[in-house]
Length: 353
Ligand SMILES: NC(=O)c1ccc[n+]([C@@H]2O[C@H](COP(=O)([O-])OP(=O)(O)OC[C@H]3O[C@@H](n4cnc5c(N)ncnc54)[C@H](O)[C@@H]3O)[C@@H](O)[C@H]2O)c1
Ligand SMILES: [Zn+2]
Picture 1: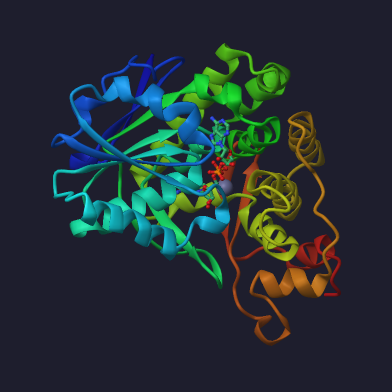
Picture 2: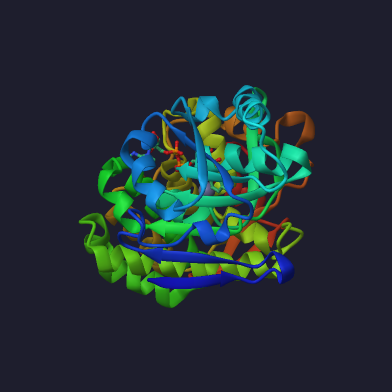
């Protein structure tokens, strides 16, 4: 079992990582302020893991709610359902909300915890690789609006993040690979040694070697914790975590959400961002090769230049608008840049300068 601390003064919290921590392997009840908790999960994860979570909450009064599975349910309507359940079960300020599932469950359950009685305690038990290395850490919570992703939300840090890496054994392979995109991202933006380790151990990760996965999750959480501790509310450095995401979000948006998984879109987006960065060809090749080795796309799907520009907020009328991209100085060092090479961007998306 490994513990990493997210250092945020009085809002600091541990990320506890280990295989088999569910089934009572870790005393989560210690982090439940009162005695009552509401476990929020979904119809896929609850049958697999809700009963395994109960022994970790010995002595607590547990109620639960199971949401329909999918990004399309990360909505205000779902938030309302969770709040209704809190109200009707008589939850009070000491009630703890526990998210058991992937990033969708974590984001909406966390937002419910942020809203109910102006904020009750919250615990993350992430069960996808993406949630274990990214969405469960850092306190961003929220739901989608029909006009855009994550438009409504709040910062609300959890009391603890409990990662049982054993839950990944039931995760579909495509979801595992999508999570690897965010793992590669950490190496690319802030840790060249980790990037090298990923190059040599990608095959083990794909084969779900427990030690390799545990290390990749631990290192990713350490790196995210460092960045979040430096800039909790994304007024500066935290933005580097969006490497590949401007292009990635455009891909998701143009294809329609759900066609490509978020990690798949970010993978192709990182290759594009590396090209826009103008780093050495050999480094761009290393990034593409690592992404390909993870079974992820290195090229975007066919999207017209007009659609690219429009979805990135750069249609003809607002061409002068300053977009900011996260670019690489080299492999392992990212920065936020508003002064990128327009010609290179236009060439990348097939537009005329
Ligand atoms: N808050 C943040 O900082 C942050 C960061 C990145 C992403 N996100 C959000 O996270 C969401 C994506 O998260 P995700 O990739 O985890 O998707 P997800 O929550 O939709 O989970 C993917 C699929 O795997 C299933 N699943 C989860 N755990 C499983 C398990 N152990 N075994 C079998 N199936 C399992 C889910 O039911 C779902 O069908 C997006 O909404 C995104 O906006 C948030
Ligand atoms: Zn992401």
